[in-house]
Each structure stands twice: as C-alpha cells, then as structure tokens.
Length: 150
View (cartoon, rainbow, N blue to C red):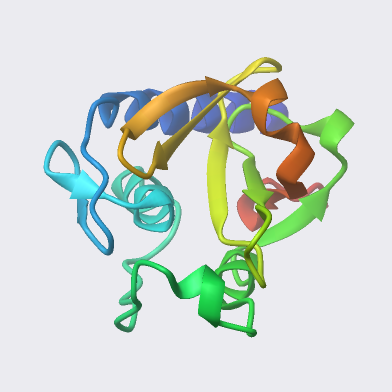
C-alpha cells in the first residue's frame, strides 16, 4: 500500500513537472509558463503538488555557483531529501550536478525515467534531456524525505 501511494505521488510530481515544459529560464523566477531557474523549478513543482511548504529564497545572482564557496543549493535540497545510489534512482528523484568552473554543486533536475530528466537550463528553459549527456557532472541523487522507507 505504501509503495502504491509512493508511485502515485511520483507520477503526480512528474506530471506537474511536465506542465512546466517550455517555461523560459529566468533567475529566481518561480512561475509556470513565465520563468524559473533550475532550483526554483524544483521548488515550484514540489510546492504545487503539496510535498513541501513554500520556501522563500534570499536574493542570489545568476553566477552564484562561480563565486560561492558554500553549497547553499545542496544544503537546501538536503533539508528535504536524503541521498540514494544512482542505480536506485526513480521518477521524481533529484539529480544534482557540479559543472566544471563551479565551486559548488549548482544544477538539479527531476528524474523522469531511466533515460530522461526534466530541468530548467540556461537559455533553454524547462526541457527534457537525456541523463547520459550530463552524467559526467553528476554529483549525487537525492530522494524526498517523504519517500524514505521506515
């Protein structure tokens, strides 16, 4: 019964995420169809399905990952998630990335299935991408605390 409820919740999260497809990239935006960045996309989706409360974010510049030595992005994810192995990823889990030139992990996406992820990417907005194309920068996989096995 718990697994069935979790699958229903995961499907609802991915369905909500897909409704954001085509939303333009906009730093600190958090509005479906109008604009979001990768972090506010995650927040907007999980808030819209009722999995986390609204979280107010302090101001941050577009190039925060290049100048910030504190992994604030990852710290915020860890407040609501726990880490899992890449092989154990499921739809709705969060992939976190650290690209070259960045001091800290600063990009994230929802797992759609074993092959694709959905994320908001600079100059492209919310898109589906093949996970393989980003695996070189994968930092970790995180699962919402609500899906922790007791």
